[in-house]
Length: 67
Image (cartoon, rainbow, N blue to C red; front, side, top):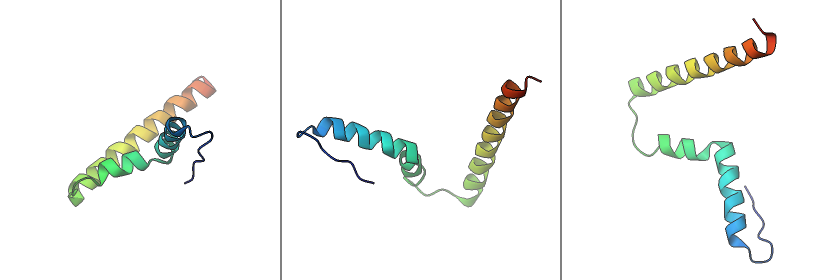
């Protein structure tokens, strides 16, 4: 990942870098790997994430198709 600094504006470049990292999911990954996660906890988290994704997809589909 690369961000260029124009006119010594480091604050602006840092803001762009943070947005890129958030879009890539790096912050979420860092949060998960901050401490050890037991295999049972990992399995439960993945199941919850899967349910959340499927519900979101169903909501989007319902809005799009209208029924």
